[in-house]
Structures are given as structure tokens and as C-alpha cells.
Image (cartoon, rainbow, N blue to C red; front, side, top):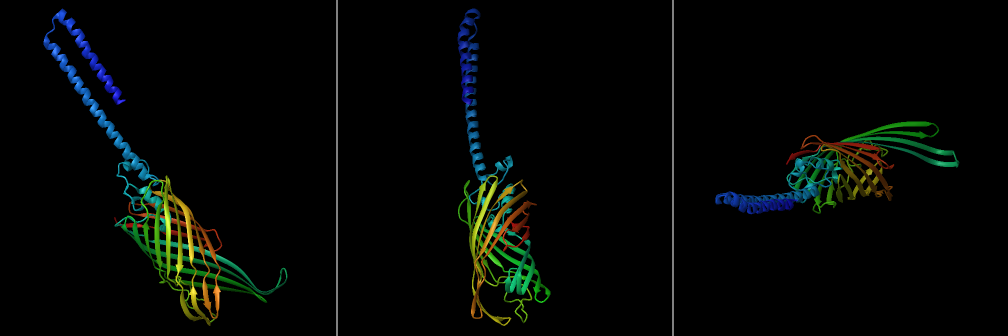
Length: 418
């Protein structure tokens, strides 16, 4: 269009010049126009021609600026794809994200992208940017129940039993307060330290049917620090549009909590308290991914927990406990996060734990536990209170018999250094 306008203006100038050349002789013949008038008109045509050249140069410069702006816009949209950011003028005026940026904390105007990834589980979320320190306290409550019916005896005919029938109803409540610190060594590497404090309460009702029914109620409690943990996470690849971001992790779990073998027992070998830790050191390598797919971020992860065996070598209730090989576990998860607005986001996912059988040397025998499947439906919400403060609320609902009935986790991560 700019070139068409230029040709029209040039044609008009040429027509004016021709008109001057055609009419000037007639006027000179009839009116003897002075030579000065012809010179003036010639100067005007030259000025108009110069003006046309200047306008053409300005149009070409404007077209170049428009092309540069379009390229910047395309690059900016590509960098923001999948982060949930609105296409606002303020967001588009910021520089494009550098490689590795979306895995760390985004610039202040990138509040929605940060809130979106914060809605997913902590161990599968984004990394902490270089030089940033985040204090991440949390409070978790879980509830589980188990009903069992045990028959020890013989069954003469269906429905007629001789022996001992024992039914138990176990309801357990657990509250875990956790203090965690995360620090970004670089935009691709972060470290985390975590220390929990555990409170447990179990109410056990046992009904024994012998000659007459006997009902016993047992209440067990336990509270102490749990197993401290340290984790390192590293982003394996750079950020590219429509490509997953892969993050490798390595978690080390200590045995600082009260071991199941350290709690008190009565003369019959029945526990009179509850443990707050596993009693074993563990190491858990894992890998996870984040896949931006505007306006959703898909996440997933796979991890393997190996707990190191050790010799207990203790008599508990008159029974000698030797070497114990605790259960290892495989954990897999998948889900997505969705940003509703710059402050609020939510996530939905599924997590499944498969626990291998454990082995215990008890006396002269080797006992093996059952393998367990714990499947949980995971829901999460995140709200940005300030640029440095987030509030997350997570829910887990057990969908297999080995999983806890439900749990609720409240987190409030706060950025201390940035």
C-alpha cells in the first residue's frame, strides 16, 4: 500500500509539471509572463519531489519497525506459550524469557505462570531461580481406618464355626508439621532441606468372640521429630515451545525419627506407643517433567525409593529380631495444572505407590510382608497473596484399600531472597 501511495504522488507531481510546461507558452504568448514565475513553479515541483522522497524513506522506516515489532511479538508469544499469561501489553513489553527461565521464578509480571506451577505437588514443581531462598512451611493432616475380621478355629459346616473370632477397628490420625528451605544454586539446579515433626494418634477397638464377647479399646500416641530429608534437583534440558522440561532429582532420607523398634513394648510384645520415622536410611532417585500446553501445564514423575537394610539384633517381647530388609517402593504420578486468573490456579492428578514385600529375620524364621498398592487422587489449589507469598491447599483421597482415606496439606511458601 505504501508503494502504491508513492506512485500516486509521483504521478500527480509529473502531471503538475507537464501542465506547467503546456500552459506556460500560452500564457507567455498572451500575457508575456515573466521568467521569474516559471522559475518559482519549477522550484515548487522540485520541492514536492524532494518531499515525496522523504515520505517514501519514512514509510520504509516505519515498515521496518513494524516487521521488527512482529518478530518480537512472535518470540514473546512463543516464550509465554503454556505459562497461562494473558496477552496483555505489559506482559508483551517485557524481554523474552531466557533459557531455563520458566523453570525458575518468573519476572514479577509473570505471576500467573508461577502460580500455575505452584498448584501442582511440591516435588514435581518448578525449580527455585539462582540466588533465591524459599522458606516453605506446611501442615498435613491424614486420616486412615482399617477393619479386619480374623477367625482362628474350624468351620464344621458353612455358617457354623468353632474357635476364636476377632474383629478389630483401627482409626489413625496423623499431623505432620514440616519446615523446608529451598535454594537455587543456578537456574537449573536447586537444593532442599526438610525437617518434619510428627504427631500420631491411633484408636484400636478389638472384639473377641469366645464363650462370650470381649471388647478391648487401646489408644496409642506418639510425637517426635520425623525423618529429615535432603534433595537435589537438576533441569536436564533447555526450554523449548511445546517440548517437555525434564528434571532429575535425588532425595536422601535419614532415620532421625523414632524407629518402630525403639518404641516401648509390654511383656507380651505389644507396642505401647507409635513410631514417627521408618527407622532406616533411604535413597530415592527420580525424574519428572513439565509440559506446557496453553493454557495447561501437564506434569508427571517416576521415582524409586530404596531403604537400606540393617541388623536390629534385639529381643522384643521375648522374640529375637535380627536383620530387617525394609520395603522398597515405586511411585508414579501424572496430572495437570490450570491457571484461572493471575492469582488463582488449580491442579488435578493421580499418584500410585507400589510397595515391595519386606523381609524380617524373626527367631529362626524369615517373615515376608504383603505387597501393597496405594493409589490416591490428588487435588491442589494455589493463590498468590503477594509477589513473594503463596498459599497452597492440597487434598489426597485414597482409591485403594492400602492408601490412607484422605489427607489435607496447607503450604505457605515465602521467598526470602530474590
